[in-house]
Length: 102
Image 1 (cartoon, rainbow, N blue to C red):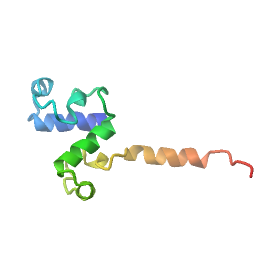
Image 2: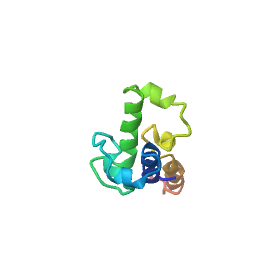
Image 3: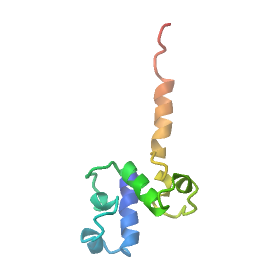
Image 4: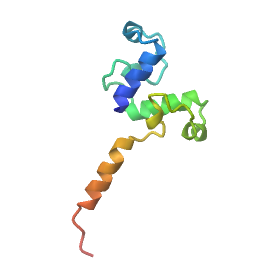
């Protein structure tokens, strides 16, 4: 699942699977608010918005975010503020780089 899709799922969970509730969401202070419709828009990237939401959920304690036991939460894989899906891609790119002469 992509970060944008996980945000959309979290919003659906919050609104009891009612998409009309998401459109009319009254929680404008939520870090996910501008991304709730499943589109990339707003002040933050989806990953940064997820990190902010997770920090809010854990009362601002980054250590607790890392220990979060809610692995059924759609935001859980991205709670560290990193997209785990890109990790392998970076390693593959580095493996094919041309070595620099010393």
